[in-house]
Image 1: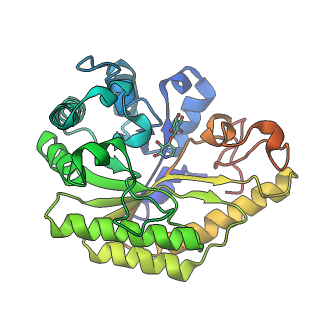
Image 2 (image 1 turned 90 degrees about the vertical axis):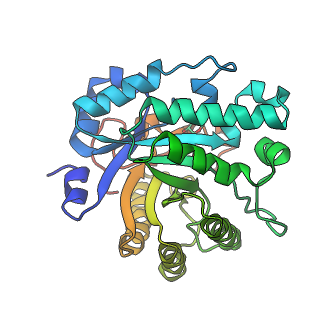
Length: 323
Ligand code: XIL
């Protein structure tokens, strides 16, 4: 049948996936990407520690190859991600406030400027809200927050807007999707941040919902849709940016596992796509061969079962799964 992007486009949506340059050497992977995707995002090769391994030493060779692959295949690109505590370059630790503010400004100018006019949406700030105990101001205690204070967030958005006025600018985060106490807190924190940015006049256009779904955790369409409406009312559009299913809690049997994750994704997407502000769905990898879920947070021997994770829409052999 038609590829996922063709089906999405028929409904005014985009579909795509994360990839890295290593995958460009696999003909079955590139064929599957061409068949299914209209939108691509670098899984890590645009992150700050990758593009500026030491101060002022910029390396764009790998992300340039991804941009070129997208161009020849007439696909759109997302930019991911300018400021994220997990990709802070190690040299950042030596900078004082002025040095860090300058480094962030230079990084955004150089990185966004590199592909000016060619990136549809940039994830400007990633995962700045903490879910765990967000009572004080909801912001994660990152190096950026510690040294620059909360203004690093609007400053990053302003720098990105200047560097590419045509790009749509996103705040991107995880952990909002399920019907759990932690996700309810996280949604409150994310909404508080988005409202504050809007009130301060920051150039923010999009909320990215990562949607790293967890099989076995409850999902409630109504409370998820209430959250998406609150976001839409701020005048933002919404992109699903990193969809996959951690299926560790599902039975090891492959058919049962695939049925379980497909059911969760169906319920999630039915609820999500009912919101008209949603514009795109991007999966974090396209096939199970390449999922970050395998790296996991638990060592293999401590996982509840030994079955290999099947988090994505295509299997290891690039065949479509029920998802
Ligand atoms: C992950 C990548 O998949 C890994 O390959 C990399 O080593 C670490 O980052 N949220 C995000 C993504 O926004 O950038 C993360 O990607 C997954 C969680």
